[in-house]
Image 1 (cartoon, rainbow, N blue to C red):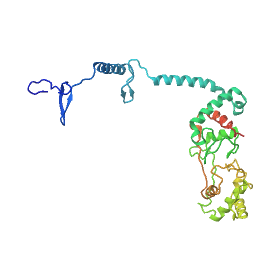
Image 2: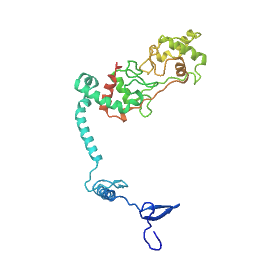
Image 3: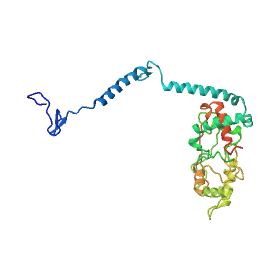
Image 4: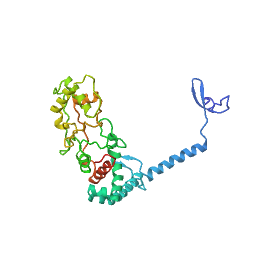
Length: 294
């Protein structure tokens, strides 16, 4: 702006008036936005104000403004979910009244239980047991027929209902592998001997200088009470079968030694307080049908 004439200063290079602003000798040209762009911009502002009035928009302490129409996608989702739950409730009525054996025997109930059980497994069990139920170190494989507490429909259901070592459930399954080394029950050389003996139970190789006779004696004195004289296990106590090649924490010598030294005590939640009885039934049938059900 020319201070003498109060007229806009014209840039010599472009012939465009300047705004009068200058930074380090650089003058700002007065080049306003295109009218069509400004028109769209102002129209969007008006449109947004209309949205604020018509639809829920402004947050409040205990919710949000409802809007003139009172419409929200959340309301539609809630309606859809309620309709789905009503449909499932009618379908699941048969599951609620049927026993596990009846569900397995009835094709319609079995198909419904499998669908509902698969969904429940994906929501609640996959994190530990894997998508296909193959498990991982410390988490049982549900596809084989090797079970700590039994793999019948009834025992699977009980495990789901009350969990394993679940502190919040008085009826939970409890079994404890002692820490023979940590608690000073066995010395290091005794642990080495019995660890090598445990490997022989499933036909695995041992260390060349392993004292297998001593390991057999220690096993009979300290381990057979739970695992049995031949290491076949005891589902009543959750004691695993040591005579097969299936192990929860690994069957290499180092893993077996660690188990004997420090003990084991995995935890599974009690699902009774988290899932309804019909869902637990469906989950029982689904797990039993993965391939390892007894």
